[in-house]
Amino acid sequence: MNSLQKSMQWLSRRSLNHILLAGVVLAGGFIVVQRHQEHVVAFLPYLIFLLCPLMHIFMHGGHGAPNSRHQGEREDG
Image (tube, rainbow, N blue to C red):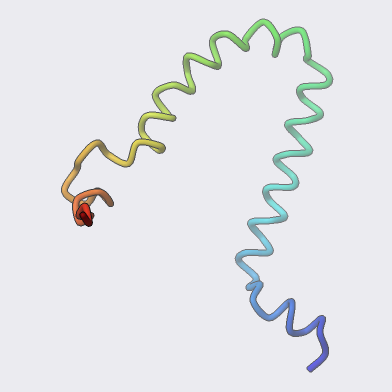
């Protein structure tokens, strides 16, 4: 088995599809931003406020929900 086969072994078809989809979405987003830059700049303040709830949902980890990752932690002292 050569090095290329070893390096590609960990990538499944699903992960390759995800990488391809992310590339297409990024390229499309770049094109849209370039062609509609004035609209994007005008919408930017609202986008910051729209991102706040998403950051709270995904970054805070549930604020002490039963399956929170902080529940099982103990302080070693």
